[in-house]
Image: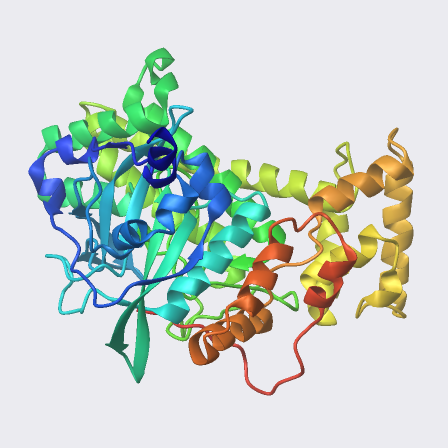
Length: 491
């Protein structure tokens, strides 16, 4: 009897702290059942770390939970309300096709949101059907897990199930539901919503909740509300620097897509840059390049300024003083970001110490890469293994001169060449989720119901710094094309 329980007990251990906040922050809503759910992929390692029983999740009852057909014991499904600046325009939003089941408390005592994405209409659906298609849900699974492998803070993907139903977009597509795991789904847009439509007391409750959940060290701060702003700025500065260092383009950096926890969230039209170009844009709707690769640090600062505006009533009783505190905090972002980026770039070039000339060394390399349309990831990979001939820069006088400067720079530090090489191995991934490889996996999954291509891709992406022979084929570039690669928001 005990053995049977061990196999069938799923391990859900829910708390619902968000549901204890003011009722205006959310809408209670159960998922809409689906016709014929089928488990497509389950993140077994993540499940185990959450304290969940993998076998139980793969059972009929377990799949029913992942599809929204069954509400597990202790869960209290709800749709969160939030607002946001979308491409600079402020609007009321909310979980239009996602439901927070609850917060899983792990065996280690950690707290994670468990959210179903594509689980049906909510009061915030704004005319949408509340459903999701298989391709975009698998895309989020692949990219979010790749980001985790790269060591970048991110929401993660526990599972994808198909629904046995179709969703109507430009064509009929197979429906699916993603189970997303996050430190929380608190967003800049959550604060914008409460600041706009709630009271100052509602705002104070939200801030105190956020501090308790994500910043428990607040008790040592003289101004707890300023502390929150400063800590969010620090986390975002580090996060955006990590994006830039691997060539990641989020694609839709609206304020509702900036998580207070410092995790990457909402993988819609995201992609990774091949040839280095700060103007790189993938999203089909970003026609003016607002969210281009090179603009991401500036947009992050803009979003954080909107966050600071929501906190003004709490920062100081005097409005002018509150604005001054907010402006001073926001002004720190650029320096924090630049320090993280410089440290990361030094590591990518095997440099341990600091010299003033490092900035020009890095800038000159990036300028050469842009001029010769050199692949961002593969150029650093070639430098790591002392194979400059494998780059698009090979044979140019400018690059040869740059290499002389770089080698001289390495020679001015105490660390050995072997130590520099190891630092570069640990800082330059062997591969990224190349856009053509992701599309290849999605096409096989959606059109052929062949998930083996995706599974192989996920396997090599799980350890991007391993530099194994198996990863080499996944570092190859796509065939030349006259058409730029485009991504879509994927609803």
